[in-house]
Image 1: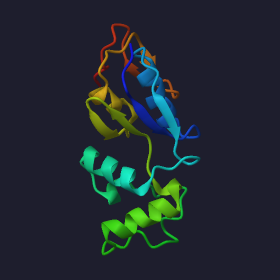
Image 2: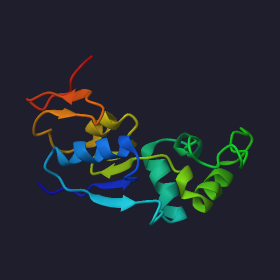
Image 3: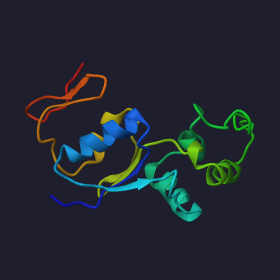
Length: 143
């Protein structure tokens, strides 16, 4: 199946790898953008945030970033200031962000991507840590 799906991906991130694998488990090969190597332009980043229905603060990553050093926990910072920081330091952009014909979503946890995939899972899927997410029939495993 072909579908226009884009994943803003960091191959070093387990959640991002699991999300990519869930997309591929539908038979769709997405366009993979390693955003640390090729960050989105500011206008595109603003559009992605808006389309995902989140705020710039919701997209900020704290762990393993200069978040604290830059004082980004200050709640009085404007959305523009937060986006400025993400543009200067793309590692501050949380991942994975997925764009599909059904919407844009920050896929944390990775199985959140299932909400915006236009095709069913082709079979069982387990995360890298062994957690079963999709059963053999392609259905989400309920806990």
